[in-house]
Image (tube, rainbow, N blue to C red; front, side, top):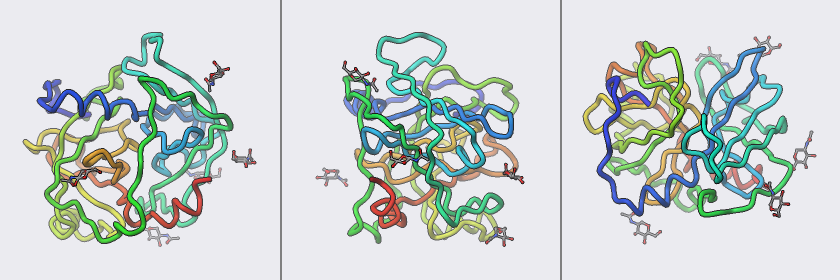
Length: 241
Ligand SMILES: *[C@@H]1O[C@H](CO)[C@@H](O)[C@H](O)[C@H]1NC(C)=O
Ligand SMILES: *[C@@H]1O[C@H](CO)[C@@H](O)[C@H](O)[C@H]1NC(C)=O
Ligand SMILES: *[C@@H]1O[C@H](CO)[C@@H](O)[C@H](O)[C@H]1NC(C)=O
Ligand SMILES: *[C@@H]1O[C@H](CO)[C@@H](O)[C@H](O)[C@H]1NC(C)=O
Ligand SMILES: *[C@@H]1O[C@H](CO)[C@@H](O)[C@H](O)[C@H]1NC(C)=O
């Protein structure tokens, strides 16, 4: 989570933080011999939603639920492994299109005061854009482009959803209608390496999955691109079991 190189405390309602942080899941995938840090969310007691990028070519993924600090053995943490993925059939690794995947845990997680599931938009909400709405993103990604290590603690930022046209113009029309963009309130806060797959939450519903940012890095103030979940409601209803 790049926040101009430093952590800034967020003034969001405490109940919102407490409610919302339950759904963030940390992922560590083994891909081509490397370890890849990502985020995800629990959409069913036995299924985690993430970006396709996070599990594409992965041999196995370690899933940590109920965590705040990944370096500590917190009582609330539950760690599982899985290698059972459903990646969108039309995921394009080069263009990042259809960046969505489901990890099947093979067992049900027990919901606790620190682990919760989250809803995604129903089919009827297909035309909702959430333009100018406030959203919440969080992750265990890097603080900035120059950082060599990932964050141990979950960091959260409040973001604004920006209209599609403004976003695709800033990416020279590469952003698709199946994607949505956010920008930090002060343009300096954004998702960074390691935050892919993390949920974007608006009013208690997960509306996006962190996908990618500018080639020039996460600190340049470019919008962040997320998979737009209203466009995947039917894919989800077919693939979430
Ligand atoms: C995925 O694996 C295939 C086969 O090993 C390889 O050719 C391809 O480059 C890999 N792609 C990525 C993005 O890791
Ligand atoms: C994937 O995206 C790249 C870049 O936009 C494009 O050139 C390529 O044709 C796409 N691949 C498929 C299979 O659509
Ligand atoms: C993946 O998980 C699903 C649901 O738990 C199960 O039906 C399927 O057999 C699993 N596939 C593999 C290859 O383990
Ligand atoms: C859920 O709780 C039961 C009973 O305490 C336990 O046996 C099981 O291992 C738990 N499941 C997971 C995934 O932690
Ligand atoms: C937020 O969600 C609640 C319950 O789902 C709904 O009643 C309310 O209208 C929503 N508020 C906004 C601003 O969308």
